[in-house]
Image (cartoon, rainbow, N blue to C red):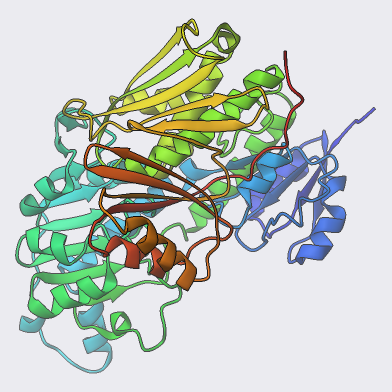
Length: 546
């Protein structure tokens, strides 16, 4: 009988986190930072839980034989160093401590904002070299200026609170908040970025990096900004197009920028961003405070032990192991719904007013709550900076004014159970703007997508998938096939469907297409949209259920 939990600290933790772990009588702590992949793979199965920071990589190889490992806690926000798919496949819960670094990250963004407005960096550099040039560094006061907060999650809200205290006017863009105002009416909300930009003197970014936010501020959107706008990015590199930023700085459209993050980190030594006279740069210091490192270590340790002790679930990033009470068919539909939601997530480009999950067949009724929540996770996670899980996803969605509806019905004319997910955008549903996806599991127990937004098909959602919407005209299939062939990407499967004057190609590729291929396709005449989604490989077939 196990008397103590065995915990591996695979990275160096802050003293407070270590002290907490050492003080717990029901665990045995082993500290081994700096292990390589092979070394870690050999010992990981000996432990019930593991605490990491960003120094160690948890790869599929590390988790190949996980043994007794039940959970991995990340002391920090990002889990880029943990292969979530591998952890999920092995039934290992991954937790992070996102909340712990909120204030630290927000404070750094606001410090950059203040320093940018008053030319602190350049003024210090000039004085340290013997200069004294007061007129050159005349700045602007923050009081009375309008701050545009792009992304109004936990960090964006915290920045807004500080801006209000400085007498600033605050407006915010977040397509996943369906309310006219926030923070007791003090912040006007926008669901369309282009509507906010002309009203802001300063822009600060607090969104995750994904296909929808990459290059959010670019040549086109810069032209919508006020002349002389200031830009702060302490979120993720790539959200602000760096070439567009340099052009805007040189033209005067942008009066200055403060950057803590870059598209390539560290940026090259000869990067013009390092020496531009109107750019203030810091080396990704957002969460780098003593307090934050202490807090994330303690939070990760406490969350890990709470889960192992069966006391609750906090900070979950994935949801493996929480579907074990479902029967085999229900598990297949839960898996299918997650794949469907992730497949149409890139098609959600504006605010979400309502998400409807339709379940046909009595077998799915008792799994309705699980399917609904996991569908929401797949649909919304890439659009939000809050880690979603079965426990918090409904609450997070409802906080943002997203209405949720799950409908269960008899199969009727259908041949077996079916699941459908429909997203109604802010401003009302239209045939073009309401992504809808339908899936079934047939007698061979393989998951199928049978419809996407009125385009009918039959394809297994698995692996690398590329969705191409194009004008329905001759030569489009050959054009796409040629581009894939010239890039050396083999097409494993394809479904083509036509509707009105457009068509949809759903392509399964053997390997991930390079960004250059996708960008070429997007600029081809007749191509209306191209998105790529990476889904888990197809699950092993389950024996036929009668």
